[in-house]
Length: 349
Image 1 (cartoon, helix red, strand yellow):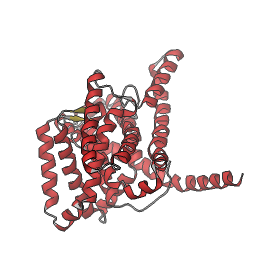
Image 2 (cartoon, helix red, strand yellow):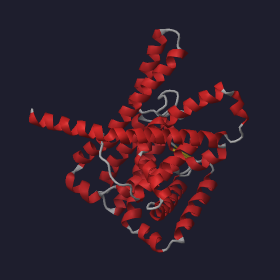
Image 3 (cartoon, helix red, strand yellow):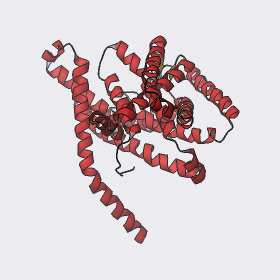
Image 4 (cartoon, one colour):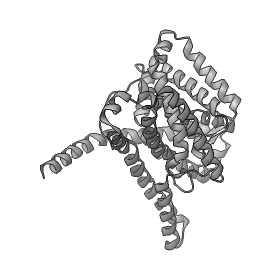
C-alpha cells in the first residue's frame, strides 16, 4: 500500500470530479439522475486508468513487476479498507443479532464475499464500491498483453473480450458476477485500451488548443448517456449497448480531463485534486457514512420533510469523507517514517 505524497495534477482533478459523481450516485438523488451518472462514471475510471498506463515503462520492467506494483496499489488497499468496514459492520450487527452464533456466521459470510469481491451491499457491508479495485487489477494485467499485439490483433481481442463478458453474463443468473469481477475486467481492459489511445494519439492536446471542443465532447457524452437510458451498471455487469458505452465513456472522459486541465491550478481544481488523491478513502467509507445518514433519518423523522434529501446526504457524506481524508493526511507522514524504519530494519537483519 503506497504511502508517498505528491502534488495533485490534472488527472487527480479529473479523478476528484469522478469520485464526487460516485458519491452523488449513492446519495439518494432522483432515480433518473442516478441512472445518468451510472451510465459513465465507472467506465470513466477505467478509461482514465488507461490514460495513465505507461506502456514503455512496463514493457521494460515486465509483467511480474506490473503485477506486484498493481497488487500494492489496488489489492492491498482493498483488503485493508474492507477489513476496517468489516469491523465497523460487526459492531453494528451486535445489535442486530441476539445470538453470538448468528453474529459469527454473518461475519464469516461477509468475509467470504469480501474475498470474492462480490460488490453487493448486503454481502460486502459498507465496502461495495471497492469491488472496482480487484477488477481494475485484473484489467491492468489483461491490458499488458493486449498492448503486445498488433492493432488488428487488439481489435480482434477486444471483440473476444466482449464475447467472454457476454458469455459470463448469460451463464451467471441475476446480478451475480465472477470472482473479482473477472467478467467486468474483460470490458475494463477494452476501456483502458481506449484511454491509452486517447492519450497516445494526442486527443487531449487537440482539445487543449481548441477549448470549444471540451463542451462538445461533454454534451455528446451526455446525449449518448441519455439515449442509452440506464443501459450501464458495471457493478452488476449490465452493459446493454456496448458500442454506445465505449463512445459515451470516451467522450465524457475527454471532456472531464479537458475541463480538469483548465481547473487544476485554481482553488476549485485543487479541491477536486485533493478529492482525487483521496479516492481510496472516498470509495472505502462512502457506504459507511451513507449508513450513518440513514440511521439519522430514522432517528429524526422530522428530516423526512426535507425535500432535498439527496443533496443533504451528499453534502454530509462528502464532508465526512473530507474529514477522514484530512486525518489520513496527518497520519500519513508518521506511517511513512515507520514504513521506512521497518524496511531499514528488515534489510539490516
